[in-house]
Image 1 (cartoon, rainbow, N blue to C red):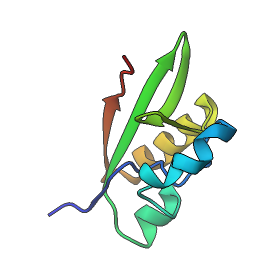
Image 2 (cartoon, rainbow, N blue to C red):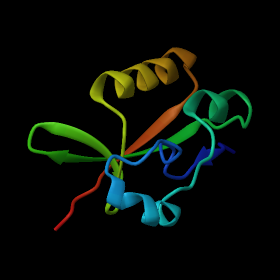
Image 3 (tube, rainbow, N blue to C red):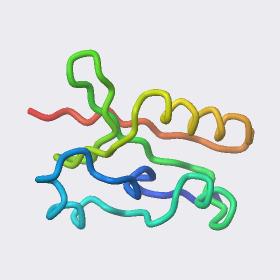
Amino acid sequence: MVIGSHNSWSYLSVRKWWMRPFRFMAKCQRVGINEQYVIHDVRCFDLRIRFEGEMLVVAHGMIEYMCDYVKLISYLDYLDRQGDCYVRVIHEVRT
C-alpha cells in the first residue's frame, strides 16, 4: 500500500487576493511537502499544474498557488532524491 496526498501543494498561499475566500474549497493539505514525506509517510504526491502562456502555475480548479518554477523544481528534486516517491502530474485545463 502506498500513502498519497490529494492536491499535495494546496498548503501554499494563493496567488491572487480574490482567491482567498475560496481557498477552503481547494485546500487539502496543511503541511509542506517535506513534512508530508517525513512525518506522514506520504509517497505519492498529487501535482496539478496549468499553463498561462509560457508560465507554469500550480493550481486546483480556479485556485492558483504561489509556487514559482525554481521552487517547484526544488520540491521535485527533493522527492526524486528520496528514491521511493511518485508524483502524479495533472494538467488542469480551464475552459
